[in-house]
Amino acid sequence: MAGMFEVFVDEESFFRFRLKAPDGTVLALSAAYNTKSSAVDGIAAIRECAGMGHIADLCPAGMVQTPAAAAAPQFVAGAHGNRRRPADVFHGRARTLRRAATAPRWTGAARAS
Image 1 (cartoon, rainbow, N blue to C red):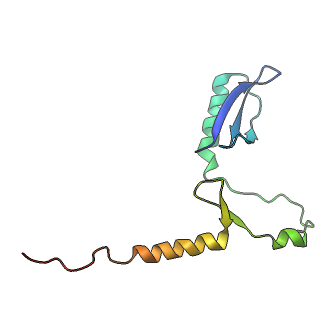
Image 2: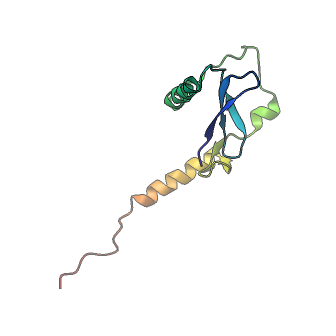
């Protein structure tokens, strides 16, 4: 299931939208808009740019990871989004599946009647 955008009116009577994960967690909250149509236009802009967005590292150069955080395994989201598995297991399984797909699909030569 994909995330969902919710358009709502905040306590100051402005239109806003929020992006919610399938489990209900709020992932993003928009700026305030004067009209509902401009909030919907904001959603369209997010949908257009989100797939190709770049990541900018704005952290100070002096920041270092703690040893415990550096030793933690990196995870990749699984097929169902809520299950996570280590990145090396995911890629190892993909290689295995690719090799299996290259085998012939037939079991023998066709026989003439």
